[in-house]
Length: 148
Image (cartoon, rainbow, N blue to C red):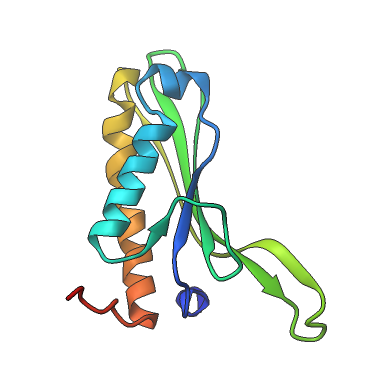
């Protein structure tokens, strides 16, 4: 059902949630994640826009939360990828919610030291989640016509 919520979307605006200081210190930055997301979606033909959100596009929100290092250097991380869309109620179309999650996947894991390897653990998981989003998007939308 979640894939159906992607039908007719024209583009995604990518947003990256705030990262904890320990994640940034380990080299996991919002810029790195944004680039990963935009490149992966773009390479698959899923439109990405950088301008302000328009009524017919959705926001793809990526959040990565990390727990502080525990004894021995292990830490936990949680990735949540959500598609946020403007939604109107069927029973009352004049009631419009500006930002409702219509598609999402979450993943959580505990990993060992050193924390500098955090980007190497998080980025492949994010890529797998994005691959599922791409698959769902393409399953309900025709491919964009090739440029002449």
